[in-house]
Length: 288
Image (cartoon, rainbow, N blue to C red; front, top):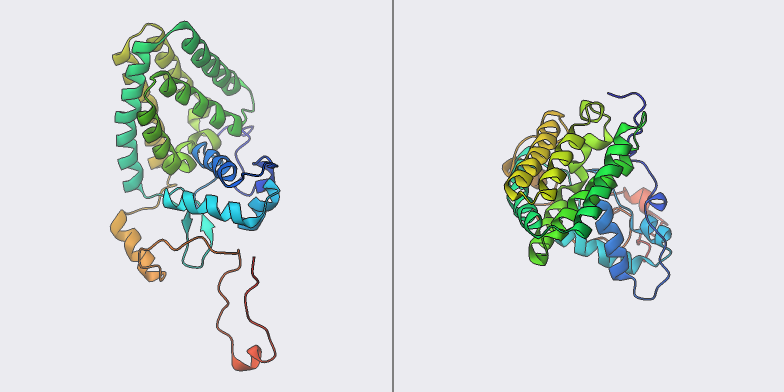
């Protein structure tokens, strides 16, 4: 591990991650900001997301935040736990490997098409993101958050160059599921940082795109995805076991495998109290 590496801090306040909103149509704006944070890997698996904290950070009421979170829960980017907290889902090794396999196919297809459509303007954008990523990686103390952002911008500049909006949407949906774990190696200060592994893969990818070689570009992308996936699997950051084990855990927690709706406030259900404790106490929950 690079001792000078500045890793992402899971406890970073939401106020440091979002931009306050002032427009009247807010639900979509809240959704886009939260969606971008998840896709870019700026939120950690298991990290709780507070309705009230997000609303305060964005300078909006709780209602548009709840609506945005409900959309993200439906897309499996967030989940509601049995105790009614909203959090970024943890991912099992089985899920991760399945999504990685799909990513290699879909993102490889986009890369192949991007190579065939590559022109000077598109290539200039891709080269710029690659050079900024490489420059950050060469620093004595690379900024993990910036590396994560630059990596995403580079990849999606390539996928947008394919000019296949349906395919792009499918890729975005995968990153929405896998984003929080995808860039673990870029925020952990691993040997992949010291050895600039991603930079080497990106360099081969950009070179192939510049020459219009779709097969070589696709192979370079696969190497990049597989290399990161191998590190993540061996790093012990994934939940062990597949869907069978997850289902058993959900039932044990009282969730029965169902995803409840986003709670109306951040207060968990009141615990059972003795009659003596309840006496004279107004136990009704605070309304938002």
